[in-house]
Length: 222
Image (cartoon, rainbow, N blue to C red; front, side, top):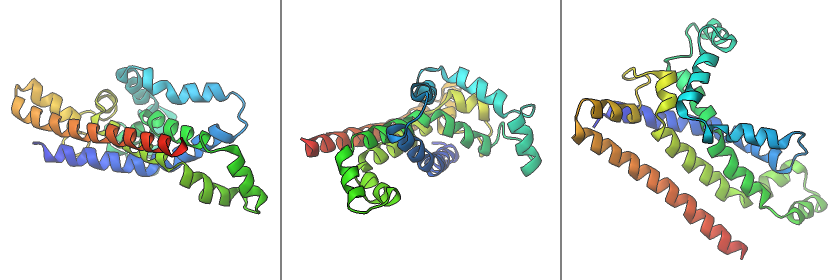
């Protein structure tokens, strides 16, 4: 078992959730209730990582974050090193390819909040901000937990984008998914099987949690 790779994957998944979920809440809230011109375009743009081959998405991220790109040059000028083949670049790429897994469940949860509940909160004197914190977020918590579970599990299992943007640097960008691939290439089926079982368990637990929350929420509505 490659514990360094597993620890790196867990660290990447943790920071992806920490950075992405607040951003996803804002985006989902705007798409769910805001009057956004071109809403379908933005929803399609967010959903794009679901249908793009990981290598294609990874290629565009590699070009966008590379040393010749404005983002890459600006980051290197600020921090003294580039984004490509670093944990920072891996984290930024992880945020991008996890956008639909975080935004869509939260958006659906916000859209499921009855309009009259929000209006009743406003009539009772609550501001839009208080309504968001005390009404919408508590009612939309299944979407938040689903987004957390899906983002965490997807980050652990992502391979193509991670390989394109981060490479396979031990201790820096070599995640457990890449470690599994390396072990298979080396015909080390025992270690590859162990690491694959760990990812399978994480993925199954995440999907099971999502369906459990969805079913409980559906029963409460009925």
